[in-house]
Amino acid sequence: MEKKGKILLGMSGGVDSSVSAILLQEQGYEVIGATLELFGDSCTNITTVKDAKKVCEKLGIKHITIELKKEFYKYVIKDFIDSYSICETPNPCIKCNRYIKFDIMHKKAKELGCDYLATGHYAKIEYDEKWNQKVLKKSDSIRKDQSYVLYNVKKEILQDTIFPLGEFENKDEIREIARKHGLEVANKKDSEDICFIPDNNYVRFLEENNLKSKKGNIVDTEGNILGKHTGLYKYTIGQRKGLGISSKFPLYVVKLDKGKNEVIVGKEEEIFSQKAIITDFNNLLTENKIENMKVKAKVRYSAKEADAIINQIDNKTVEVNFLESQRAITPGQALVLYLDDIVLGGGKIVKCYQY
Image (cartoon, rainbow, N blue to C red; front, side, top):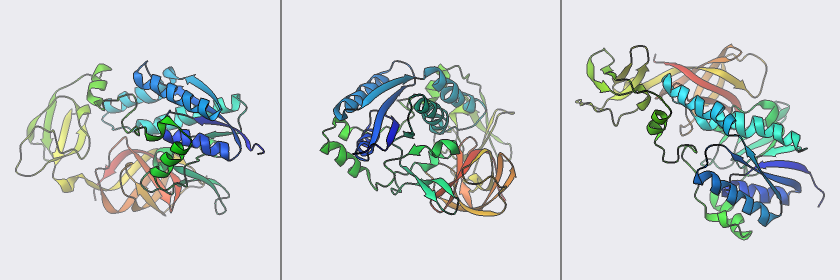
């Protein structure tokens, strides 16, 4: 088979990236598997490299490791800690994709003489006649779609990117391909926690990384003191459990006030907002200023899409007005915008408003 080109594939040692290697080989690409060493010397890191290397040996493709611990700390871990220190709830996967898995990996691909970059994300890159360019699209699998966490990848890098798994509708198909090729990772469990916090105890992690606990008041929306808290970073917008206060009706975290060091709580209807402001807007489709554009918007990875109208305030700031109020819009999280199944772009939530 004539080779289509040389491709650098990010390999985590999991079934998705392993099957991506199989599919790319079958399509005629010369594949180089690259595993990133991102933090510490944990068992997770060692297993990741070992599993990825074994898959590459089985498939007869070259495998390399790329040590990026300093870069991962700078762009992902430090940002994670800093975000909580200013009462934001970050999504570290988005930062990792932007700066590590795509920015740095794309540069490495070019250094190795590769024509393309690939990952095992569930998304699609396809040419669209209307936009006259390749666009980022949702995967065919609604449940597995990862386009949300890819919105912040640079437009020019996406032009050189291939997502082999975008047209698969369920994970069983992927595991079956791995089994047919005799890969031991066929039944390997998916990773769902934050990779650098395997026990998912982010409070412990933040405190171990010198985020200091500072006691303050828990108050209602009228300023009445209801209790005490031991650190704003232990709370997030919409949280109900673990508040340590009693009430005749359920109370939810409405706002975190860093200036007053207060956790503000209220009734469920008070956590709904109809307007949000996002910054660091990454527009994947057009250079033109956006005015009164109808879109679908997601306020978090697990949220359903909602109808909205957007207006661009400046190059990096967008106002998002929802047709129906959205639950627990949270500063620090990403708000991603879609036109049907195409990702328009998105940004970081900095403010939200009730009407």
